[in-house]
Length: 55
Image (tube, rainbow, N blue to C red; front, side, top):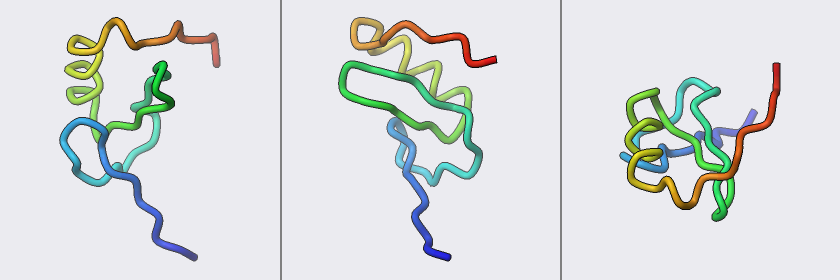
């Protein structure tokens, strides 16, 4: 098993839980928590792509 932990695209902490992600014009972004995801959304509204229904 390889250790390929991703870093949060906002604060740089390790992403321990999947699910805090956004699709942007720059590619998929992953976050360590809902707070970092929300802050990124506020600061980068113009880069976000529409979310698809995944449920």
